[in-house]
Length: 184
Image (cartoon, rainbow, N blue to C red):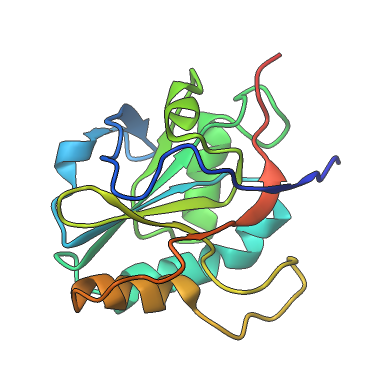
């Protein structure tokens, strides 16, 4: 299995509006940006097979549990080529079930949404404020490898800052993960 370590790149800039999407979730429902009306919105490009996602999925689930739904909504988007091993809609359903995911997990089959956001790796998290403007693009925590034990919940700290209307000093802190598997 090819695990190419990729750092997220800055396409969407701080202060820019979240690009809209209309994607099907593993629950069979269609979701768009307007379905999420909380003080913060965390859009995470993720997938099923990546060790970096598997290493942080529990932290992501804990994040959603930690905050009330009007404070934080998380949405996971899978933009990997559905033909890639362990990817695709059926595997997403299995993954969501296995990890008991407590947020919508959507399939970006055309990969257009990943391109619009400029997502390049999994996980690639984008945090938006109430106006759906980008406030932070970066890490869930400070672990740089799937084996590392995180010591700081960077995303949680930043969500708390937004809720308290404080400024996030480091608004771009590149996430590290596997590269998104683009269709050839």
